[in-house]
Amino acid sequence: EAGVTQFPSHSVIEKGQTVTLRCDPISGHDNLYWYRRVMGKEIKFLLHFVKESKQDESGMPNNRFLAERTGGTYSTLKVQPAELEDSGVYFCASSQVRERSFGETQYFGPGTRLLVL
Amino acid sequence: AQKVTQAQTEISVVEKEDVTLDCVYETRDTTYYLFWYKQPPSGELVFLIRRNSFDEQNEISGRYSWNFQKSTSSFNFTITASQVVDSAVYFCALSGGHTDKLIFGTGTRLQVFP
Image (cartoon, rainbow over all chains, first blue to last red):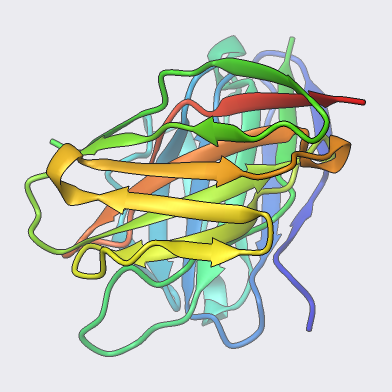
């Protein structure tokens, strides 16, 4: 069974440009999460989808970030326009949905390393 | 507020030594979940273990063992007879009983030298 995949693995862009990151969750996982690790700091939650609905987007830093999950399958995270402080590693994770249950194990992708110059 | 503290930024050991990675957490939830993830040099986050707050039984998996103590809010991870392949950054994480959002510690970089 394929794990969580992310594309691209690396992206180098200039300040002001737009970048779109993609995540394909494990098949059958309705929960999809985005996290980010800025260099030297902890991994921080950005948002959570259940199928195509945004369950929690409390971690999104500002309106330059737009996440979508059309059809409840893969997700995209767009940064427009990118700023220097957006540099970091963007992780995607997925988990199963179980009724009246939390704390399901999240399985992570390899991450996208974004460098904004 | 929820918080995870991994006070050890970096640990270096020689192969075959035992090593313990510390994790201290803070939460007001009565039900919560604790996790350890491994990030090898290739970059992906690999799930190691999940522990529910109502299950304080320690767990052993091969050379890995975990010591969960609610009294001290700690969930420490021990590698016995470390190997070079254990070299990685290890993250401890917490999620509350009403959300799936993971709160991560800053990670501990473990270097195992031959």
